[in-house]
Image 1 (cartoon, rainbow, N blue to C red):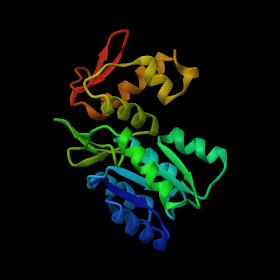
Image 2 (spheres, rainbow, N blue to C red; image 1 turned 30 degrees about the vertical axis):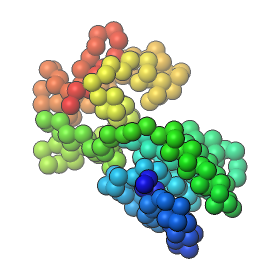
Image 3 (spheres, rainbow, N blue to C red; image 1 turned 180 degrees about the vertical axis):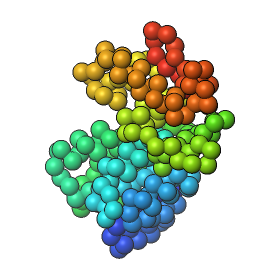
Image 4 (cartoon, helix red, strand yellow; image 1 turned 120 degrees about the horizontal axis):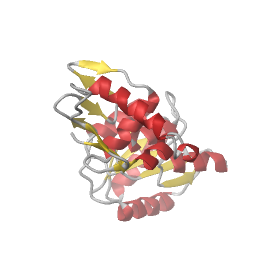
Amino acid sequence: MNLVLIVEDEAQIARAMQINLHAHGYRAISVGNGTDALKAAAQQPVDIVVLDLGLPDMDGVDVIRGIRGWSTMPIIVLSARHGSEDKVEALDAGADDYVTKPFGLDELLARLRAASRRATPRHEVPTVQTADFLVDLAGKKITKDGSEVRLTPTEWNILELLVRNAGRLVSQQQILTQVWGQAYAKETQYLRVYIAQLRRKLERDPARPRHLHTEAGMGYRFDP
């Protein structure tokens, strides 16, 4: 049975969804805010997330981005926001589907079945341990020698992309376009500066990197 994580701050709606999903063969747990959602997604063997965007502590789009930092689990948005801009933002952040409230149970079940069919078996973990530091993809933080390493948002975005593609070459153009945008696809000097900063913060010997490798003229590779 698939485990569905319901992220909904209205307790009655969350409870009704949980009961109905149980009745149709799903296991379901519910949380009422974004912080608990990110923790539950990282700690539980969640298969599908059903997410309301209007949460009390953060926007649901930030929850999507947080999960997408380490996982490809299907995310179905259930929201009272009907505007096309809201839908585009959620889908661009990584949502797989968008359902507007009010919705029927049959529609939700059909969306869940479709998400289950599209999902691929995952062996994802929200943390990556290296010999020198720990990358917490769910919490978006780095720990080295027992202390948290402070990264800028840009440094984190570069590292996250490399870590999620561990062992594989990530081209300069791919990093530049995903982190800065298409207009920066040729600004390789930007990238060299930030990679150097990451090495100073994370590597034991930045001059002889053990984890952040340069593939000359092509890109960079992360080795745990």
